Image (tube, rainbow, N blue to C red; front, side, top):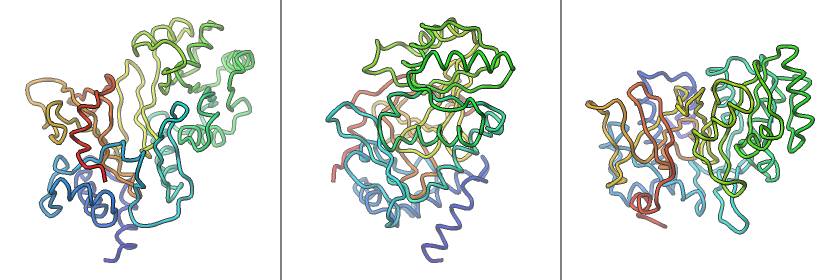
Length: 337
C-alpha cells in the first residue's frame, strides 16, 4: 500500500474508532508517523526504538511538547493551510502547529462537542476570549468562532471586554430560557462575574484556563467556587486543549475531564520520564506527567509528552494537577536536534 493509500485508510478510521480498537489504530499510526515524520523518526532513533518491537501503546515514544517551539513537526511534506501559534509573553518563543487539513480539526472538535454537549445548534455560543483575540492563528479562537457560526443564534458572538452588553445578552437568554454556552479564559470570566453577579439557570460556564500574567493565580477549586458563587451556577465546566493538539477533553465539573474516543491520556513516571505507568491495580488513581495520544494529529505527531502533571482514574477520566518542573521534561527531551 502506498503512502497516500495508507494515509486515507488511517484517517477514515480515526473518528469511528472505539475503545476495543484504539490501541490497534494507535500502533498503525505510530508506524506511519515513524516512517513519514523526519523529526519524530530521529527522536525515536535517538531513544533506540525499534518500531517492529512496538506492540503496545505504552511502548510508543512520546515527543516532548517543547519541540513544537523549535522544529517543524510534520508527517509527510505539505504546505499548511494555517499555522496555529500558542500564546506567550512578549519576546517568548511560541509553539507552532502546522495544519495540513483544517477539515480534520473541524471534524474533531465538532464531533467532540456533540459527544459531550449535543448538537451545537441547541446553544447560543458566546466567547469571552479577549487575550486570544489579540493574537492571530489561535486554535481556540478558530474553534469557538466555528461553534458560534454553526449555532447561528442572533446573540452568539465574541464579546471581548463588553461586559455590559454581555450581561444584557445573558439576561435576555435567561428570560427566554435559551440554552447558552459562555466559554472564556479564567481571568475574563472572573472579572465579569465580579462586576455583574447573576443567577444563571440556562447558561453553562466553561473556562479554558488562562490566568497567568493577568491576575493573581488561583487554584482551580478557588476559581470555580468564585464563579459558582458570583454567577449562581452549580458547576463550572472546563475545556482542556492546546495548540499542539487537534482534540479537546471536557470537564462538566470538579475538574474531572473525559476524552473523546480518539484521544487518550497516559501518565509517565516522575523518576523516569520515559517510563509509562502501567494500569493501576491497588489504587483508584495514579499521578505523573501527562502524555497524550491524539489520533486526530495524524499530520503532525499523535504522541505528545506535555509539561502538565495529572491524575488518571480507573474509568479513564483525568485531572490536571499542575505544571511539571523542567527537570522532568528534560529526561524526555534528551535529544535536541
